[in-house]
Image 1 (cartoon, chains in turn orange, cyan):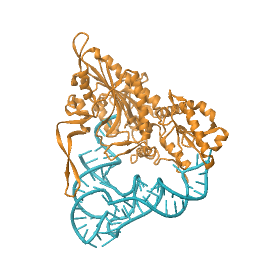
Image 2 (image 1 turned 120 degrees about the vertical axis):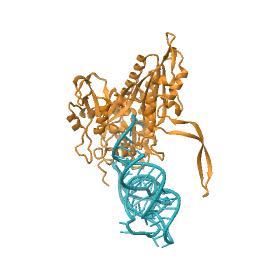
Image 3 (image 1 turned 135 degrees about the horizontal axis):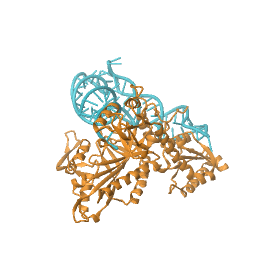
Image 4 (image 1 turned 30 degrees about the horizontal axis):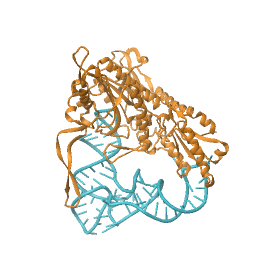
Length: 511
RNA sequence: CGGGCUGUGGCUCAGCCUGGUAGAGCGCUUCGUUCGGGACGAAGAGGUCGUGGGUUCGAAUCCCGCCAGCCCGACCA
């Protein structure tokens, strides 16, 4: 009878991880499958991914990259070529050891399939493709004239994670991985930074998620990389999430794979390589950054549908006129653009109780809901609900005004989400000086049932990887990055070792 | 991989201790009444109780093995 306080239970402050799972379910984004750790991405969730792909793919092409595709299976020996890399991924690899099945009739009449045909050399299902792409690059590169080689692939990869969570950490996930080879270290570093910048812009402008861009410490680096650049977002439980990484691989992988070329001085040289990736994890980031206790809130730019029109049909005799009016409005809106693309509009004509249908779209996070009923047709008005202003927000406006201003309204919704996320991050980012302050910041007040606490701590740091281990063991905090901006540069003293430090780093708990 | 817990209609779960052969709420279908609104009533569909074995006249319930999932650790995009 009476509607619950909020559509999602528990609410964020009650149990954030459970809230997250319920939001994913309520919005019909994805579900756990029968395959351990692997999810089924449902149309609404996949629609988000398609938009992410479309945006990023355009940026990659603009910056000179081409798409290609490499095998899912990697010869085991390839993974052994780069020692650090091999160790980094060793504990999470699925291994293919057989290539055929034999049907065996059981006494009870059933059939069992027995793997036979053992492979001489097992294959590993790619956890990432540096090694096999490196082998291809070695074949493709002979001269400095073949460089730079700028390749991206859209693919699935598999990492046998211990504790999977929808979107955030699944055994199989979708991503793009860029792989490039260059003549000089400078060029490769420039590429690494360029793609890092692309990711930062993507998160901010497209997903409305502000990020701190920075460099990883040695402890947090990609296995085999000389440098890893990251973009770190803060989500609503104040934890950090790594939303994209760009790696400067130096000559490690060229050495391992033999990516050699004849240089301008007729000398054999090793190429300098990079790799960079963004995964379906960004969908989890998006949810945790923006969703509220009534479900997902999608920034318009990434929403599969930006506007859903809901015909209000109280009486059968006006139903057809209302639907016609909705369809006409949809056509008008679709002929307009937002952020350079035709506006995506859906008319939900399903014969469902109006309230239930409305709530479905609230939980899915569609940016604008537009209701049109018989009275609106008479008055030439529409009821507009902006999801970013809350589930209940609803405003009547003349239809012509809405059509005139729809692009602005979408822009405002997009900007509002970014502002809100930025405000949250600023509120929970603190410059701290002492170990005691650090400890207080990262210690929950209620140890039994830890409340949402902490955030980003900007600390002076001059410690070692072992010191990072200690802090990680005691507080579950890690250095998320050494941020790039000038605002982090200042003289001070490391809070842990007391040694002099010339810039602050970002400490946080993370996903 | 260690420690704890759990597997029962689509979903959430009760029943298990004290064995007698399956229940609720939500969801779904149909009909009616409502309806600018996450409505109400009635009727109905839907379950080899994770799996294999054992004990028993009889097992969702007791015992053993296996599998899967969840939570807490270690690992991670």
